[in-house]
Length: 497
Image 1 (cartoon, rainbow, N blue to C red):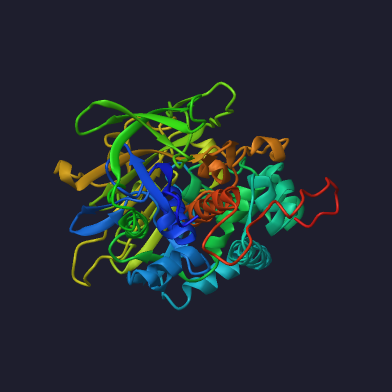
Image 2: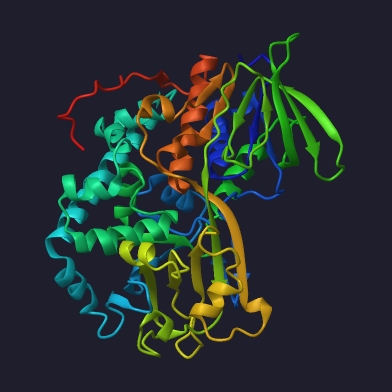
């Protein structure tokens, strides 16, 4: 194979999934591959995006990752990117019950006693959820050993079954029902903590499926991290590594272009990309041996493909992520004025009953980071809301919950198609979709139909790189790549959930 010309791969999308795919393709094939990465925004990072606001760097997309996320942690170490231990801050929380009333908060008082009061309130339910979260994370972590051994998967169902067969059963179930039936938590924990975590992470409610819901419980685990200078540094470094080793005629940087179509070229049996170069606005086309679709196929995606390709489309949750440099209007939340100190990291989340009962509750979550200096003004507030509840958060949400802002530059809102709408699925084996769309055509976002986040995008990216390696049947690695060696479980009632 060393005497052959490098084969060509197009990666469409410069987020974490596309960046990781490109990185591992380079690791597997070395100089035997030419990689072209297309990104219509012109920047690497996708939904990982940090901006300067209020004198500090703030994440508007992917915000935190956990210490057990081996790819994110490993890449940070590899590229010498300093991390920040977020959960070392003075963490506090409050649960808003609607109608200007906070049901519970541990904001006031000593930081030493704050965790004790959480345990006092939620007791056995908190213990059960924490133990379950540890086991859940442990099962997810099996994927690292499997991928290191060369295992890859044609569908998310096969991947999930390899980690824990019961994961597929979780996707069929309503999270709120599962919490009480299987985890046996009480109504208070479900209404406050469980609902609050789902709101804060996915901008959704307890009607999501139990797999996605279970993933939010990992917020109970310690060692929450972020990168000091922005999480998007990881995909940026991955792309730099992947493209920097391209052959002489290959691109050294991403292509700022919008891909319009991917079709099979009948004369060569290769895949033909048609795209618009954003700098020249000219329509161009090129041929590739493999194409990796590494952007979410949500309701706004519009890439044309051949009729025999079942291109996945899924409804994504629309959310507004806001940054507000201002003071909280405490009475609107039923809190004592001045309760929050500028050294606390506070999350305010609505209870399920409060959000559903009070149509005037405009937020899915409010969170403030500690101020940078002890004598500085209060830190930056992060807000999360959905357009179906509040169409114009700049006007209505900030007016309701914050003192008069004044200058426009003290408010910033970004609208994201952030996550799939995680409804329970009747047949997850089929409805989760496939990583392999057609011969030579792959989709990293398939796993996002089950679990979403920076780490899951990295896992999916490596999986697709391994699938291409298996298809080539020859790599510069000594390990044999193995596809779908773990069968899907038979449906039965005694599977561990």
